[in-house]
Every structure is written in structure tokens, then in C-alpha cells.
Length: 607
Image (cartoon, rainbow, N blue to C red; front, side, top):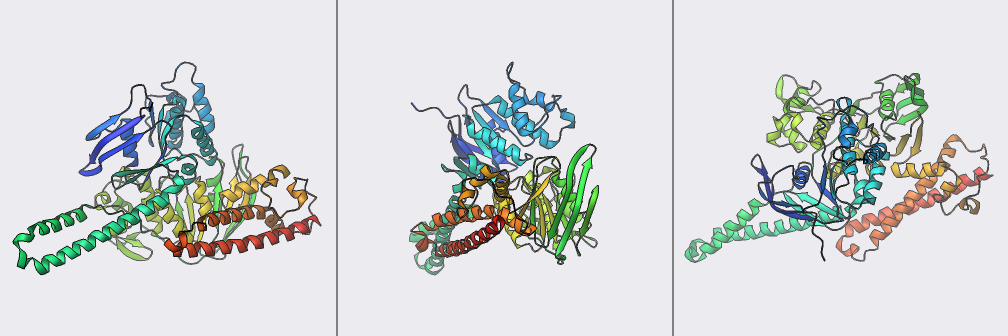
């Protein structure tokens, strides 16, 4: 016997300010569903989730939840008024003896349940709201950006909890790694329509591109048909006016159909101006350390940052990532050691707290009121990378419409605030970018664009992020701050860091990550011989990091091999086939060279 759905939306229509958000929307959430809810910023994801939760009443349609079914909702800005502590809020609604669930969640999500609500940060409030939802264990969980303000360890804990739960859930997140690990189906909101694909998130982007390609083809055919009918109307209607009025009406209907189609929103026209080139040496830090009170933030640490480096800083919240970057940029002084900057540095900072944004002013004033962007006495012009631009036109580059230009910054969503902050820093020339949690609240398309423009940026990037996928895509060096003031430098991104850290844990942990070309003793996990002094520091570091590079190359070769195995690929997509073939050859060559390098260094080390 089929089980009743947990939630059913039928013919939902909703309008805000005259613009329809949804019209005739219907969807069903079944028991066991694990749904990723994706779409552009402003497409209505959070609004739809509030409709599901019963917090927003639709103009038309029904929201049906069977009797006895519990639905829990975690919102982005929880209201904690009326509660003294975070733990009291998180435990609300629990039965006697169930408070332990809050303690378990508080430990995993890293917040103090005894902290007064009045002194709690926005991130702590969100973690308490997430703990409340997990402790209540409803039949259906609705989670709106649950990974924002979580560090990577807490994200991993949450990922395990959701993977093991028997509850259904609908999940909004920008974190690709999180979505890939958890989602079994995808709900895609696009221009008021919700589509569903019962595949994991890893299949979403191919599905989206195929859908858009089919839509473009249908629009192209419609345009050709309209042109043909219009030509007939001009050339032949005068001779056959009466008997062809039906065809004229059909042409009018075609034009109405075309005008009713909603065009896709374009991508933001974002670009960084690299400005004047900095010196080859950007930052040289020697022996820097920092202590606050009796707490060691950073033990003596050395770092050389070269022009063009992409360095990611990872670690738990409070480990000192932002403090280290502030020392490197000269904002605060280290207790010991020295920091020397290279020549011609122009620094631009993306602050995760959005401190540069005044929420009481309009978007217009946020740009024209900035002395670095003001154009003389003009109240409607801003200076963008050395050229004057009308403020409205520049804001449209970042997907803000005319109605938003005069609206207060405080009315924007989290993703829109992030885009506005990017608009501010992208207007100025820079050759050192400091990006502190830039991925929070951005939609996937904007994240892709940000990754692309960082790839084209000629300057240097210092990145703090908890988005594992974004780190892998952007960083060539990762500095891990794992507590107790320790900072360790690893080559590569997040995945490379994990492999190298596993190797450093000991011979047994290193066996799985060692390349197959290694000696039999190494593969068997035999204790490493004492290292000879012949290898230089650079060679020693290279020997330690090569296994991670080999593992990455092997994984990329395997993925490209699977892609090229499609017999239809060459005939249907010859450009992608050629590009993938070139990439495969490059990686095979790189793997061969890396294996030879590893063997040579290992032999010298064992001599």
C-alpha cells in the first residue's frame, strides 16, 4: 500500500509587489526524499521553503500535510526573542529528559548552549536554530543554508547526521560538496517554475544545460516561424484579406506567446582589475606569532607569498585564520617576528561580516557615497576601474534591477549583499585580494563566475573559506590552522590537504595514499628508514607532497576516461571530446613525470 506524501503543494500562486513569484506550482515531498532546492539568488528558494513550512500563505492553492506529520524549518535569520540562552531556545518543545539532544548538537555544531541570547553572534544564533531542528527530529526537515557560519569540521558533522537520519529533508545550500554528499533528487527553481530530477546533485548542471539548450532551440524555431508568418502578412494579405484573417490571428497569438516567455537572467558582469603589477615577492613573514591573553593564536610561523599565489586558510572557527591574514596584510602587528610587503601593493578586502555595507542607505548611496568611487561632484556617476559609469548601469552589471537601486541595503538577501560588496571591491584596481568567506549566500552560477574571474586575475589571492569544493577549484596552497596555534602549509587545495595530512599521520595511514610505483616495503607499511641529509628542504617538501599530487592526477585521469568512454560523445559534442582528450593527455604526461620525480627522490632518501 502506497504511503501518503509528507507534503503536497497544489496549484500554488504567490505574488509580491505585483510580480508573481510562483503561478500554478505543484510538487510533492515523499517519505525518504532527500531534495536539493537550487536556483539563482532571488528566484524564490527561501520563499518556497516558507510556503512549505506554513509561514507564508499563498494567494491561491493548497499546502497539505497529513495529520500527525511533523515539519521542522530552519530559517536564515531565527527569532530568539523570549529566550534567555541559546540552549533554552534550542530545547524549546522537547519532552522531559530530551535536553541531551541539544547538548549533542551543540557539541557537533560548536556553540555554547549556556551563552545568553543577548550576546550571541548571528552565526551562533543560526547554529542554535539548526540544533533545535535536529533535536526535534521532525518527519520532514526544511533547511535554508545550514552550512553558513559553520566551519569545515562542523559541516562534516552535520553531513554525517543528515546522511544517517531517517527523516526526509529539503536542503538549500551553495556548498557543492555538501549537496553531492546528501541529495538524491534536485528541485530546480527557474523563473517561477519548479522542475524535479530524481538524480543526485552531481547530475544537476548537465540537466540544467540540456534544459536551457532545448529552450533556446524552441525559441529559435518560434522566432523563425514568426518571421515567416510576418513576411507572408506583408506580402500576401492584401490580395486575400477576408479568407486569411485566421492566419493573421495565429500570427498575433505566436507573437503573444513569444512576448510571454520569460528570458533567463544573465550572469553578473563581474571582473577584477589587477591594477599595477606588484613585485614578485608580495609578503615575507618570518617567525610571526600572536597571543591574546593566555591563548596562543599562532606559534612562530614563516610564509613567503609570491605574485600570483592562491592561498586558502582553513581550520575551525576561532582558530585564528582571520587574525593571521590581518597580520599578513599589516592590519595588526604580530607579537614576534616581522612582515615585509613587496612593492606596489594594492589590497582589496571582501569581509565576511559585510562591515563595509551601511544597511540604512540605498544601493545608489552605497556606491556614490564611497569616496574611492565618487566622480567629482556627480551624484549619479561612479568610478569603475578608472572609467566613469552611471551608477544604475553598473548595478545592473551585478543583476540589480531599477526597483532595487533606491531600496535600502538592509532589504537585500544575503546573496544580494555579497554581490553589492563584490561590486564595490571590483570597481577598484588591486593586486592582492583578501576574500573572507566570499561564497556565503552566493548562488552556484555566481560561484562559477567568481571562480573563473579569479582564474583570470593576475594578482594574488588570500582566501578564507569553508567551501571545500571552492577551495579545490581556486587554491594552489592550503594553510591549515588546527588549533593550539599551529599553522601548517600544504601544496594544493582541500582534497590535497586531506591526503597529505593522512600521510603525515604515520606509516599505516600513508599506505593507502602512497603511489603504486613505490617500493614493496613502503606499500606494506614498513617503518620508514631514517631520512638522509642529502635532500634539501624543498626536495623534502616535494617528496612529502608528491603522493597527494599523484592521487589527484590519477583521480582526474579516471574521471576523464569515464567521460571519453561515451561512444556518442565524438559525434554529438566534438569540441568537448577534443578538449577532454587534450586534458587527458596532459594529465597522463604529468602523472608520468610526477611518478619519475617521486621515484628519484625516494631512492635518494633511502640511500
